[in-house]
Image (cartoon, rainbow, N blue to C red; front, side, top):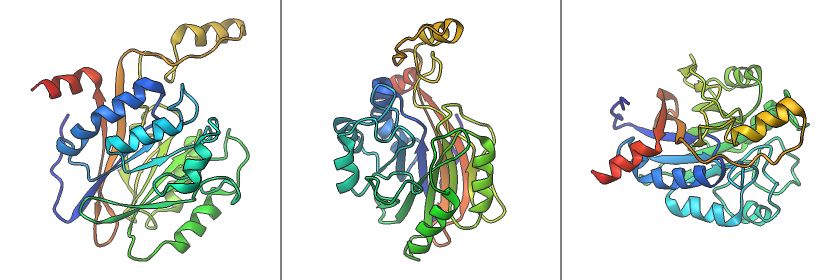
Length: 278
């Protein structure tokens, strides 16, 4: 893959797409060094709502991901599948709930983390409403969060966890010029529509999945097909083969917070192992 040189006046922020199961968590953690050294990423955000056997996030997984060097974690509709994560959401400063969840729901509606150079970056998560669980208005929620962000925090990354591309595109246009990037998660399928809108906001409908790609959205193929064809209930366990990391990076101008470049990345397990062996 071709990796453009990062300009001196910007920071490179990466959103890693839905981390699925143990294979996805392992791939994410093992990739951090490559992401820092080869991709030249200054700050890593990972959507980890599918980490625990495909649904939810455990305390142990949270600590493993952060210890590996990930700077912030976003979640989604499976946020509370593991009840134990509630205490992490209530106490830690680098993990967020969707901002359009009820105010009493465990978790923060945004977080502010810093790059190693000391540049502050705001991370916001939102849940879409088309074909998703009932939630508050994401447009009103993100407007509220932005109103309370410090003016000096100019780099602002929004993870829109949504099913419909219409939800994603509407939010991207709504936030153009107000945030650095609106990047989608949830569908597990990377889209080829990355661009920078006129107001300086980077956009992509979905950044893809981190986990086993010989699968159906990260789950073993045969049980999913069997249930689809026969309606016979099965446990959809996480697959194991062809593990890849998928994500999208954005170069943001430090002074203005506007996006100046955007690109997709997909790293295969075999490629990572080869890099470590050099």
